[in-house]
Amino acid sequence: MLNKIKKIQAREVLDSRGNPTLKVEVVLDNKIKATASVPSGASTGEFEALEMRDGDIKRYNGKGVLKACENVNKKINKILKGETVTNQKKIDKIMLDLDGTESKSNLGANAILGVSLACARAGAIATNKPLYKYIATSYKLQATSYKLPTPMFNILNGGKHADSGLAIQEFMIAPIGIKTMKEKIRAGSEIFHSLKKILLNRGYSTGIGDEGGFAPKLESHTEAFDLILGAIKKAGYQAGKEIFLAIDAAANSFFIPEDNKYILKPENISLDYNRLIALYMEWIKKYPLISIEDGLNENNWDDWEEMMKKLKSENLRMMIVADDLTVTNVTRLKKATENKCANAIIIKLNQIGTLTETMECVKMAQEAGWKIIVSHRSGETCDDFIADLAVAVGADFLKAGSLSRGERLAKYNRLMEIEKEKLSHC
Image (tube, rainbow, N blue to C red; front, side, top):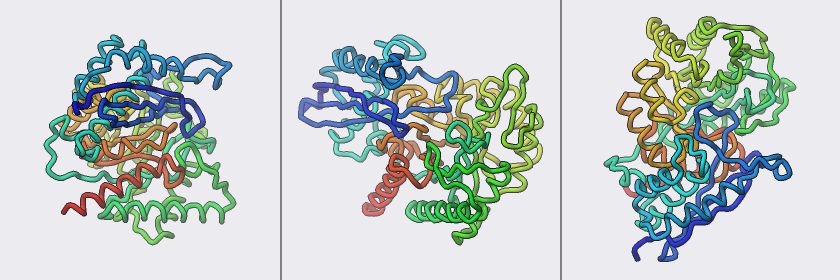
């Protein structure tokens, strides 16, 4: 039983938006099998690794992934056959060398990632370890106790994830002041359902967006905050003590490059970066807001640095979170840390394409003292890999969407499962 790779096979499946993605299966010589499915983002950074699509408009409006599947089934399968599955770093390097491009444009980051994650899961099975423990030991994190991340529940959707008309993409609640994972998730669920009742009572739609949060057509962003605060109170929790707020602005989506301005809808106001920062600071002072993700355009490094300076001058302790700015890429992260552009990072596996590169980015961010937020994508699958990843690296937070839709709940349910497993071994 040498845990050698016997076969790697990819096929086309559908993600949570009904678009094609890859599901990869790895089979070992001892008959162990493991699979992994690849997510897809709608609000994507310009510098993310390439997600390979077929471009054939006769199939799935050009979004098919048969080429990526073929790259797995022929090229990657051939070169990895016979490799020991527990040599994760070597496996990832072989694929990176085979592709030979920074953006992974030859094989597709989606093809490479599916194999990387399926191999990791097979390795965990082969060594009889929980996936989070296998990841930690494979990358010598030497964790003696595993910290569970606090969930960030995206209960109200805007931006590219919904047709609510709100420029800000995600309005999240973070149950920081609640101790156990089981109770954190219960609080999130109860607040989510309280928000639904409030929306219904006010005559708003309770349809949901891509990430399972509500998507009502509101009059302003402050109304969104106020509705959430009302839901927290109605559910019997204390905002600012048990439950805190966070947003993903996804500012790229409402930035107008030719004017160097941000158009905030539904208020229909045009803001330069200074005025937008000032608006964020107003929200921070008015609401229990602890995190602003992608608050500015991904190319405006100096503006990010200025935002950090202004928050520091006001003594406002906040997470300024880089996502599109850094795209889980160590080169961009290095520049961001040197320029002091942020103090927290979103980690998304499919932005970079391998588990090994992801772990390198996490390590660099942690060494810089940044908070770690492991994140899903808006086009998700029921694969719960990121829950184990978040535990393995000791992430501070996990973003997996709202408290509805199975592909979101799979991640939160896995965290409760890990908590139960940890407690049973105490």
